[in-house]
Length: 161
Picture 1 (cartoon, rainbow, N blue to C red):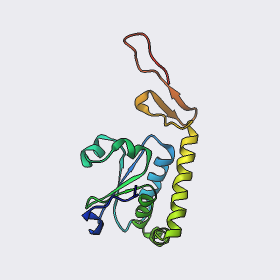
Picture 2 (picture 1 turned 180 degrees about the vertical axis):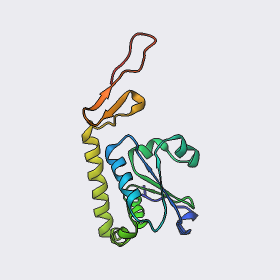
Picture 3 (picture 1 turned 120 degrees about the horizontal axis):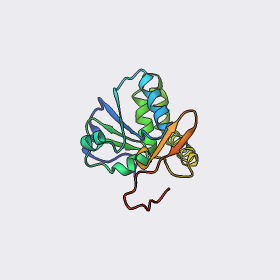
C-alpha cells in the first residue's frame, strides 16, 4: 500500500494541510507543539486524530488507523500517511523544506521510513505496545506518571486492563 492516496487531487496545489495526531501520545503532542512554533510556508491545522472534529471533516478516513499512524490531509483531498505524511509536513515548514526535498528522494525516503519506524517502536515500547487512553480511565500526571481509575460498574464485575 502506498503512503499517499492516488486521486486526481494529487495534482492540485496544496494550500493548507491538516495534521491528525494522537492527542493521548506524549511524543505526538510534543511534536504538535513543536510544529505550531515553526514558521510555515503552508498553513498547518493540527486536529486530534479520531476526534469528533476529525470525523466531521474527513468522514471517509479510517479514523482508527489515524491513531496508529500519522495522517495528513491536503485541502484538495490528498491523504498522506507514514513517512509521506512526515515529509509533506516538513515541506510545509519554512526552515525544513530543503530537508523535505532531500527526504523525497528514494534514498531519503528510506531514511524517513526508518525514522517513522523508530518513532513507532519507541511509542509502542513506552506502554508495552499499547496506548493508555483517557477514555479508558487512564490519566497522566507529570509528577507521578500514568494512573488508572476504573469507570463505574453497574454489574459489580469490572474488567481491568
